[in-house]
Picture 1: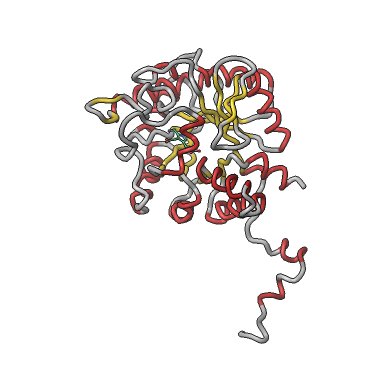
Picture 2 (picture 1 turned 180 degrees about the vertical axis):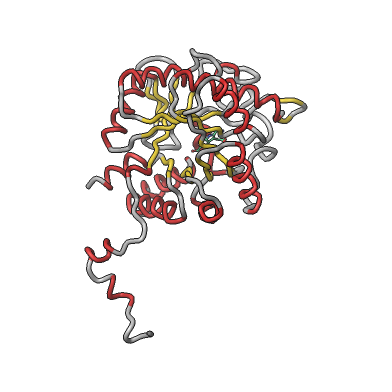
Length: 324
Ligand code: PBG
């Protein structure tokens, strides 16, 4: 049938019907809120490039987590800003690490929250790279050792799931091994499987104080031009034991999310990263776009592309709109 018998607008005239035939449903269950924890007490440092986001000391982080849970968002992803840094990121491998302490404190105060712990060294090394430096580059196999130690320590602190974001080869296998050897076989791994070397991380590096002091991350994070390679990364992580695979960033990589969802039978997470968030905020502040409308459109498009889980700094704002 063709026009005039077929008129696709017939399904668009009534808003109730439009909702009934809507193919994609964004839900608060899909959303994860990233938070930044720093030393001290009563600290709430605004992150200038990410309006509405703060470096929070543990006491205020707990208040923030309560606010997140109240909005209906049930999960947070924690990043730490440590008191001091070292060459290898050892400060992130002990029970008194900033994220470990935060997890213990949150779990003591809040029952219904699911804590995702980022596993990486870049916030904890003096040079800002994601691992141990040998000959001016991150050494893969040495870095696996700190990643495993950090993972075990985060699991011991009570992390519900670990999310390695370093992009070293073989890290999922190494983390799975140390978890299983220590009776943490129930803790899942959500690997940043296809993580690109992206300009969209700029604001995060201000937030986490994790910008590399020299060079860039091109020798471990992926080339934005590549898609087949992303499928190899995803496949390797699944074979090494990843329970959920992540694509990051999200918006410029919707095709990667789509391919991952179609080619593999595994839950897919997408990280709507800091730069994607900040662009919406900046244009919204100038009244160049309708901020809330664009936010919901972006999150819906990430879901439509195939993401089951969306990590986003918009999580609470989006939940408040979804709850209306
Ligand atoms: C750490 C890490 C980064 C992000 C999440 N984990 C930054 C990076 O790789 O430099 C970026 C998140 C964001 O931009 O919101 N490895």
